[in-house]
Length: 149
Image (cartoon, rainbow, N blue to C red; front, side, top):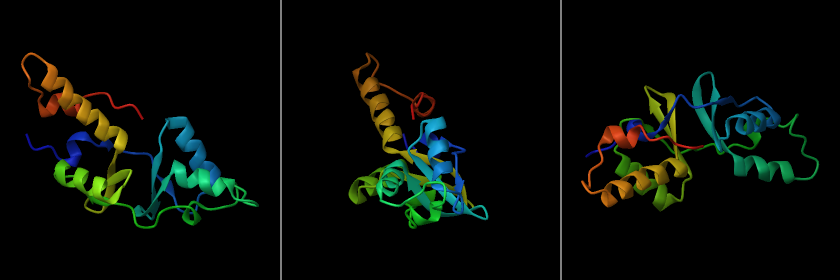
């Protein structure tokens, strides 16, 4: 079985414009229970804002989340790959570089996000399959598992 990022990513992720205030990013993350927000300018990926980035910036003295833009807190060089990249390649890169997520692209547009939570769900699916009497798990079964955020 050759899984790709497309098979296991969270499709159509929430995104935010880089000029939006941090308070808006915090609101989106809380409402949807997510920890990673691709940051866009004119529909193009320009960065990634993690909940960790957000919390760090919010703890700084004299920082007002309603007046600081996302662009000031985001990571400007997110790990982004084509959605058809083999999952093994993505997982190896994330592990080696200690990345918490990968942004999936198609023709330069953000189409998904793959996080360490997603990776653990994939791993759990494989371990369940290994423990089952038949010892098999199809791509469809792995890709259709509910992925908590």
